[in-house]
Length: 73
Image (cartoon, rainbow, N blue to C red; front, side, top):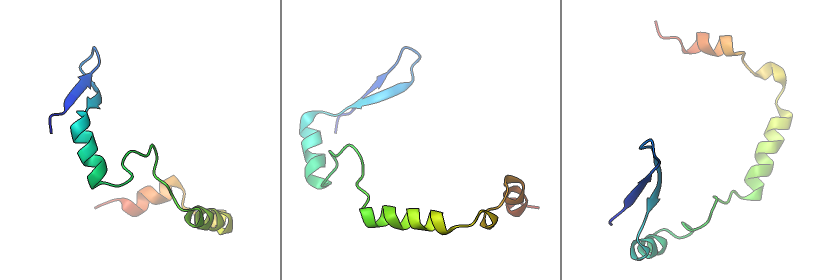
């Protein structure tokens, strides 16, 4: 595969050019790769929304509590 990286005037990579023959091979190998965004099933979205609604604010830790829990001595 002969990729070409596209950079801005500062040299930061901003994109990639993939030859069409290589793109066609990727599409054949990875079904759905051409879709713009991943599809999350509605049942999963609803489950997450339900869990968020059922969570009480006292179940959350403050940032300070999180920092204290992850400190390595």
